[in-house]
Length: 328
Length: 285
Image (tube, rainbow over all chains, first blue to last red; front, top):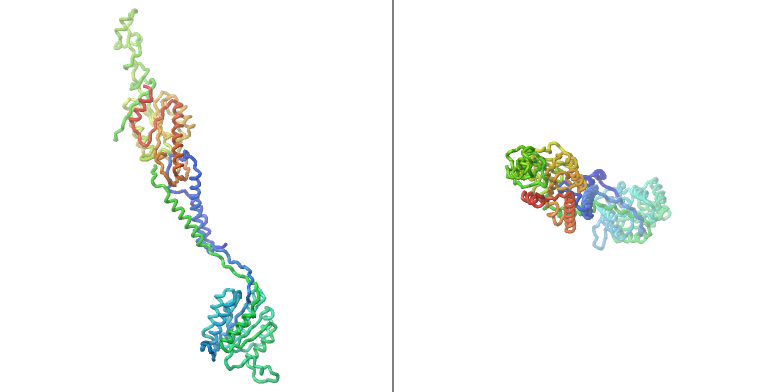
């Protein structure tokens, strides 16, 4: 139990007022001790004082806004700790081309947001964090179970974008997400980008270590320009090839050297993107333990209601009060 | 000045006062009550020579008749000034007490009796004492003050000591109070005043018990002790209060009757005629 305005509790001695002060409008009676003792009357007398005390007490408590502290309950569910790393580079605003089912003109970012939203809707107990990046990483959301927040974060990425693609920055920030969260056994980073940028050797080394240390798998969904280079093109891996190797392929080759699970998908239209996501969805279904936060309950209104009842009761007694008896 | 209704009273004993008045006396003097004969030598008043008795006496002595004069007797009003006396509707008990004081003063003066006032609460105060006087003005003044008096939280502890202010001569005392006091205290005081004839005038108010509200909650305080209590009045409790007051009335009556003093109950307002009736009914002439 805690209070939002604990200093108001200093006013609690006010509750003693009804006990200390007597009612000002009490009537004179010639000889009180001659009246036979009446337990019911005494009870009513005590009750009135208690009621008055309690109504003041609960009004004060209500003013201090009592609430219980948030609690954490460990639950077991099926899901993963997912770090979403979304590309916000300007190229993400380009539409997919060659779409056949009514999504012509849908930009890559919008499509990504839409499909990830669908993906998230299908999952129950994930903890999801969101990082976006363009020329540098933008920390959006820590790992959280609040699906609503994640959805909003994802939907917010579909909009005006910046240039450049700093994948290294995005990924290292994503790893940061997992640092302070206990390992649930299923940790994944989903990287959605089109194209790739260079990742320096130092960052490569750091990433490899971190991904291993925190036991994080990596899914890379490449939103490919139609007709663009494919990372799976065997010609780049063929021995003896010594032409220009695009940055995507370099990155792919680097990812393959990771000591943690890695898979890559290529999506050239929303449909293939959906397929990639569905694949990830089916893979990442392990039981995880997670802590559910139960927010503190606000007791302010309860206090006020109790006070209202007490005051109502007192008003009722006031109505019963004798006004016809004239004395002295 | 407002008309003050008098009542007629008499005493049941022979006054020993030499002061002429209206009451039976054992003092020889110019009265109408024949007491006996004696010789002119021992009572040299030739106006009273009884010729018939003188002729009948073979010893040829001259006889005179002796008569008892009528004498005055002191009358006192002893008034309770305790807190409970400020209670009452339509007017407070003190107002009733003031009316009684005026009536007594007026009647006593008419009977040529000296009259005095003793007011008591927890202490005897000089300003509430009027010594015996044949002139009623002090009494009227006191009555006026009595009407405006607002007692503080005081009881009736000085009733006992007020007995010491009474004269040795047997007096007629109107003891005006609501007798909301412990009966033992009252009994102790009465024991000290047995020399006198006491008329207990008991001031009760119907608002105290008879006209209590039928139902409701109220809180009351005691004007003497400051005690506070919440009352939840309802038929059963109201009846219990009525029974208590009935028992109290019986207890007071019993106590006074033990001392052969018939109590005179005054409820709400004082009627002098009822006091006249009282004397006719209960006081042997």
